[in-house]
Every structure is written in C-alpha cells, then in structure tokens.
Image (cartoon, rainbow, N blue to C red):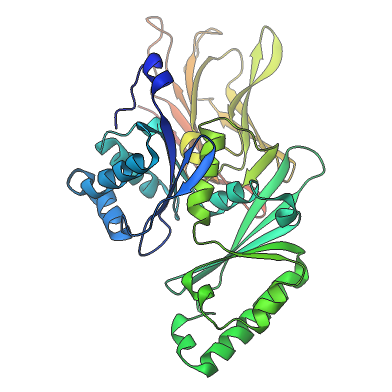
Length: 397
C-alpha cells in the first residue's frame, strides 16, 4: 500500500480507514470506515496467532496481514488505506515499537497509524451512540479466554472540556467458562455475577452495559441479567473495539470533532508540561506537551539560550486534579560564559502515560564555546497521590 500519493491523485482516489481489534485470543476483528459509514469485516480472516507472528518477524510473516488488508480494500471498493487504527492491550514501549516496526516493514506509513487502548476505543465507541445510553456511567464486562475485566466510563466536570474517564478492574477468576457445564455451576456463576453487579451499581448510577465475550451468549444469566436490564440499556458488544477504532479514526484522521471532551485513559498522557522562559524581558511559557496526547507522540525537544539564570523551570499541571507543580533542573556546573552564549538542548521524554524524563544538555555556542558535555536529568511519575519525583542524574564528559 503506497501512501505517498500526490494531492491530485488523492482527490480522485477512494480511501478508507481501517480499525483493528487485536485484544481477542483467537481472531483479529476489523471494521472499515468509508464516507462516514462503518462496515464490519467477517471474522476468521486473520488469526491472532498470525498477527503475533507478524509482530515478532514482520519480514517473513507479513503476508497474511497484507492479504488481510487487501481483502478489506477489495470488499470496500476503495483504492487505498488512509488511516489504520489498532486497539490493543498493554501499551508499553516494547509493544508500540513492535507494531510501528511491523507496519513499516510492509510499506505502511507509520504517520497514518495510531495505537489505542481498549479503554479509549470504548470511549470513542460510546460518544457516537445515543446520549441516553451514556448519560450516566457505562460499564463493559469483557470476558475472553477466562480473563475477565470490567471497564467503567464516567463523565465529570461542569465546564468544558468534560472529562471522560475509564477505570479498569480485573475480575479474572470470578467467572470460569468450564463451570457452565453443569446446572450447579451455572447457578453459582449467575449468583456470583449478580453479587458483583449489585455491589458495583450501588456505588455508581449506570445507564448502559455492554457484554463482550461468548460466555455472555450462553444461557446462564437469569437473576443477574434481570438486574442489569432494570432501567438500563444492555447490549452484546462483540465488535465494540473494532468499531471504536473506526470512530477514533473519524477524530484522529478525518478531523471530525464529536464534542469537547478530555480523554483520561490508558495510553494518553496526564500532564500539561510548560517551560518558563524570558522573552523580550517578559516572563512567558513554551508549551512542550499537552495532557491527553498519546504518550508515544508526546515527547518534545527545544533549544534555548540561557541568560543570567542557571536553572530551567518546568511547570507541570494535572488538568484533572487541578494541581500544578514546579520542577527545576539546576545547571550550576555549566562553564562561566557571557549571557546568551550558552545554548541548551531541552528534552521531555515520555515513558508510558504517567512517567516523564526531563533532560538539559549543554550545546555550547557555535565556534565561540565548545559543548562542555554536561547533561542534567530528572524523572517524575504521576501516581494516585499526585506527582512524585524519580531518579535524578548529572553527566559530564
């Protein structure tokens, strides 16, 4: 798939956005978006095993994935893929790099690729549904291969942007598919699930429930299902994450704005990061990274000239808790030079959605002053208690 079409070709070509759900254990689910309409792709076109092999060795194992994308193109009648959006779990650096590298190995433009968490996919899916379904909290019960996770979406804030937050709770072990083989096991599963939803819904007003996984299609829920359906909309959501990926493409690639919302979920950064500077003898700030950015795209790098100051001042703001904290990088070990003759390279590096590293490196000043080799670094981590500092460091050549 050649993504380098010139503007004139792009005007005549027909493009689609593809959303992939690779959270399942058996098959990769897919949808495509064309002219604002989502179409589902039949299952059993690409196995999860083939997808995992593709990530491990894309050069040799990319053929099934390429064939899969080609089948979707042929079914849609489009000429090429404009944007590819993948919903996957465990958005750690290693997994993000693997997907990016694999996409590049089959000739896909990684700038047209986004990787999101199941929680974010859920948010995109829900805000495109009727408002009465998500007027209050929405709960997704996701049970696959005896792994059981509850994801809850809540809305808060009287002012815009409103916060859409996803929290997760691991319930693995509560429901085991094997226990449904007997009547006694089915009754116990029903009672256990009923106790869970009663406890959870007592604390939160829930207007929508989505059940993901084949276990919910079996005839064992009686008491629990009756409770779920009391004044709530309940759905089976087998394709929710794939469709959520396509809805995300509307916002990320086609620039459709579904509303003024701030997403607080896995994979999105939690802090606004600004650098305080003096410009034209006035205090100012340079925005380095915004909260709600995908962490793998949130790192920043700038170069500044130091005046009299021997420190850098970063302003860290948590927009959800409305907390602001100041972080300083001390540069006292810099060589003595006249004002405005020390160039410093400043970097903010994101390691996941809640860990940040700040570095400052002396770049010297052209032919007048050689770089000293001094690099100063500090790390911060955003926890439930707030912003805490990690390790610090200072390197000199």
